[in-house]
Length: 267
Ligand code: GLN
Image (cartoon, rainbow, N blue to C red; front, side, top):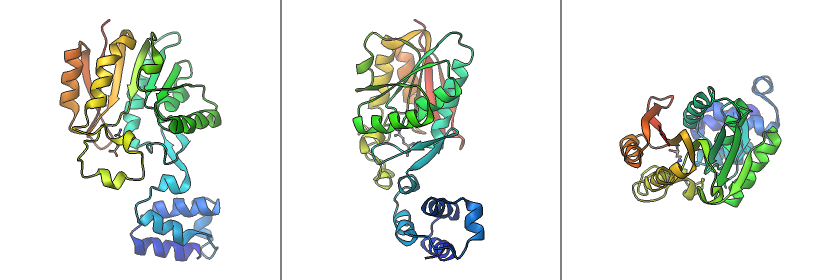
């Protein structure tokens, strides 16, 4: 099928034009300007790929790539697809790192594709960045992203703080699984690892694990920052305060939803 026929099919299937153009660009190895001027060029595989997209397969899985905080990351079904919402967490981390002298230490727990760790390392090269994931398959994707982008991150295999015994950081950041086990949106996310999306129950279990364990791994004055669901800001702030964190604070995402919370460990 040609570029023009593929765009007509995309419209008929209800696929967004921008997504269809990204997919056709991937299949042809060309950019959008080329697609506009080559309406009768053949696109091998366009029909099948557009139907998979219309059936709910993520664009990032069909192309293999997802942009995040100015980086282009490889993603596979082994990792969560990085979301623009999570750039809120990265920007907050960078603002806390900016005034720190020397080599601040940062750890990203549950790094998945490596998105948060790599975005921090790219914008703040003088930070020592460690990243942890319990999935060896995810860690392989993260490691490959780091190597391709030339960003030095110390990748560790294990659950949460397990591979960090005795180590302390200026900043602990995480986008843990936080969707409630019975959330009606989960079925639509079936192409991503369930363990990256939900801990089951009310979705707060891993956030609570992080809040309980982080003080053992924070330097005095260090911060714990976590992404969470739009309706989880209150229980997260309460848990931070109950654990002894100071300055419990909230950040909103680009859509204005409560998206990340954090606190400072007084030490
Ligand atoms: N923000 C993702 C979503 O709502 C969930 C990510 C997560 O659970 N950490 O699709």
